[in-house]
Image (tube, rainbow, N blue to C red; front, side, top):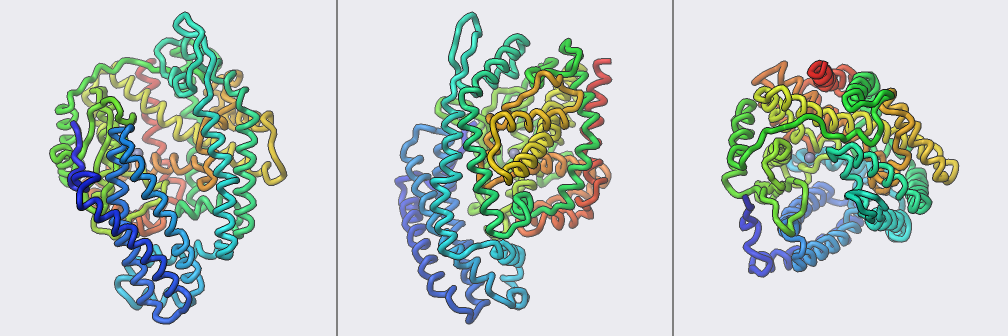
Length: 588
Ligand SMILES: [Zn+2]
């Protein structure tokens, strides 16, 4: 149940690792020098672009191999100071590449016949999307001096505000009376009590949590105003129509797609409200679900799996989809690509790291034998399979945007969940469905409330700073609109803007709708799979292979799916709505 990292390097002290660290340093110097010499004139554009792409692909191949080795070592051994130092060293090194990258962007921006140049060469054509995207984004760059100034000022501006918020939330202690004692507990511990079996504990935790936010609300509010203020200033100076426009461009998505998705989401809200009201009724509430019972566990899943059984279950059910997917999973289990055993010093949760350079992946999970753990393993294997489908692409062509990042993972999770539901007893089915609906509610309903909140926040921030009272009012209104009569309007969560870190990332605004996109796109693909059967399977692999070199709409279009049409999103939501109806009928 432990992975092997030997395929990357034998150890930090090994000759191979030391040699690659030195090469990495040399290559950075070379790129900086070479860019300085070449991006001052426009002669031989084809050769220059080809050479730049080659250098970049080569460098990142080497760099990510080193970084992955450091990060993966660290993830299973948090106290490994050597690994920590190396990761920090590598991250610092990479920032030196910012200058040649800006130079290249500006140079590409000034190249008038870029399309012609691309057309004239096979290797450039292969990177056409990457190059055209650089040209498009280059329009929003300011002068080199301004860019450097902005980068430096950010460290004392938005980045400093983000750090303050991180500090506030990670050191906040909540006063709470539990287990017959007065305690001061860290915020995550208290928030986790929302999943407690005991209803009194959930309610107490919620009340104590809200009370604790009063201590940091003013400072958090100042951070939020600072960050969003800077974002607005920069967005205007760069010439974007709005902050949302920039976010969509970074996501390789368009407004039409976002509108279609949001429209379908709004249409589906009444179904979610029915789910919340049913859950409220089962927990004995009359006016909809109080916020503190949103994550209350329901039903009992007795399904237990040994690691070996989990493997068999996953491989068997993946095989019902395709041999390629099943073979990938089997290989990952057999070849030591998975670190599944929980142990001290290892980080919690789960993730998948795709090692493009050696065409492998590594999966970390903390397997304890619950059905949830099996589902998580399947999820991470989906990420790994996505990487597997990208193996033949260059490094620059395998970087996909956030909204599409969860496609393969949720798809695999869906395969496993559907299979488990078939074998489950009625009580187990109820518990599995409920926990999946709880998750979907977060991704559709709560994400919609966050989108509403952030839209209103930007609108008002244009006029000036917002007070804590205003922020609370906007949050509560957004929740009322999204959750409708599903939640008890007297027991909402006015401080969600303090507790979610996503609002405080200056370089990622509206870090909400990509989650909804991820879930719904994967579900929509699953609906297509049910319709098209085996024909779908090959097209699906092809779709994953091009996710790093097309806009999202073009990726979907290769399968004949039009994500600008509301109907596609409706078909995704229909799958969840059917689950809601089943959930309700199970407890009639
Ligand atoms: Zn994931």
